[in-house]
Length: 494
Image 1 (cartoon, rainbow, N blue to C red):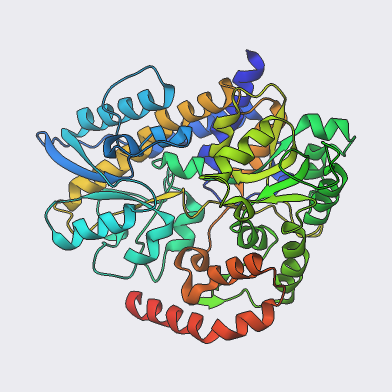
Image 2 (image 1 turned 180 degrees about the vertical axis):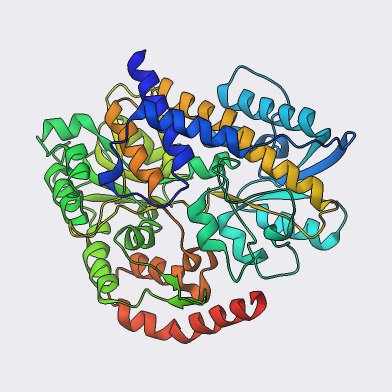
């Protein structure tokens, strides 16, 4: 029990402090007790209960909600909503969401009303229709990162910095996100403790300890600690482990593989390899930063490797054979100890709770050992961000609600998330908790990744799907389009 409590303290601290400036692996060894105490004191001094009472006025929040919408739940995490928890049911995360909402309502004298936006695939279109139709007043919206470019820079959303009574420098707002999405003094989206889905959306590497031990691989935690967990090292391990299990001479789904992955792995690996798609200059203007030799080298390294069917499982190769290749093929294979690595969102770990064998988690590998930090992306699809639609009817109340929800999410929801992940066997050792410190301490946001200007992300999807390594020539075809779309965004926001 002491071991578990220690893990929880470590991860609670990283959620609170991980929103500060990105820390490299060398900064991970802070005293748990001291840091935790300081974090609690800082948080307590940050939040001051406002002396307001809105007399049960409604605050309407739109969010992805599979259960309210009647959508079939595929993944365990889809049973939760960022905004909605109608009653206690004994589930730690659900009950934490319920208590958070209850506390906000009681403290501010508001009534939280929710509008379900359906499934992640359609939530952006559904919200857009609601805003344009103006049939419903929506004060706050949780929106999938996949649809952010639909709203930012339009007259459908407000500048969050224009809303009073909320301070985005507080620890429950992800400061990496605040810094990246502040454009010319305005900010249309933000995330932090308030978004449960953003915590689930962290992209990591799961690794199978049984296979690592069986093939006598290097201690992966030590590789991370020493800064030697790199893409070449990961590839080497995959080649070592992949083998024909059933002896038919052909690698198939009954055999053992190195890595299970998908098309989205290429751009996130480019970023974790130390490349920015775009970078703001001294005037805050986004500039194209992806056209480098390092990017070309990463593409030449990763594309042939990822598409090597003798070593890895690539999801699109099996999309016609399974309704959901991730859920029906990859998860069972990992549980059955037939893949060394599984590159996916942290949420997938919820599906491994019944797994007999042991597994751990790692940050995405670096380009090489000279790279200073490990960079950890959030899935654009799964992560959710706060927006304030122009249907918002009460700025002052919205600010108070956002601040209160952020704070009480940090107090209730994040610890419940940690409790569920740690206590229910998603994380199984101190080392994986330590890896989470590194992962969350180096969260990474990129405007180019979110806006997909000129199809900059689609470029990488095309390269991996067509098995091309000609980055420079393919980039040249869309460079002008990328710049035009950046200029258009800048013109709208400046």
